[in-house]
Length: 243
Image (cartoon, rainbow, N blue to C red; front, side, top):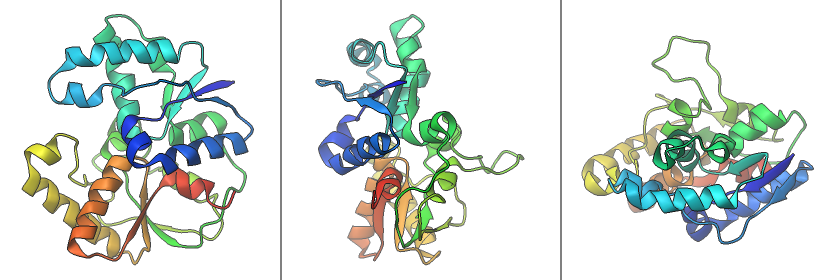
């Protein structure tokens, strides 16, 4: 099984430690991982802003870079969801590379089916279920659906020694980031972020974790501005801690 590692641009520039942790974890699990050089943005920012045509060359570049891999794995639910759900339409043909693209949580849970103990993280952690992960990638059960509850992120975190995983009230409510939404509706976005951070903090957690750096970045910015004493880590950093 040959894996192409896709590190989205905002992870590469702002949170490179998340990319390193993803590679480290996949290698620790004995997987054949390759990081194709000169990979670029997936095109999500352009498309979300209404400039879909500008995303097409990036989709073509992605297809070229990751052709031939069994899976393309990324530590970003929003970028993964954009690729999986939009590339075939943008490119006007069936994009097999996009179909093989998976978020790292989805990949570890559903494909690798990790069941051995991972790292160590002796802290109380509140789990943030990002919207794209819940409603587009199926990482956890949406609260509006009357179905048996599940959470793939939580399942993986339970493999970490010493961790205490909790969830806030309204566990899958949006944090208010939403990409362009946070720019166009700043006041609403900021208030949603503050409400979400406060709910996480009510659990008594030391850290907030989740599968998408953009949500964590938004909440961390709100917390810092409001002087809230809470820390943030991407879920893959916790899974790789102490390995």
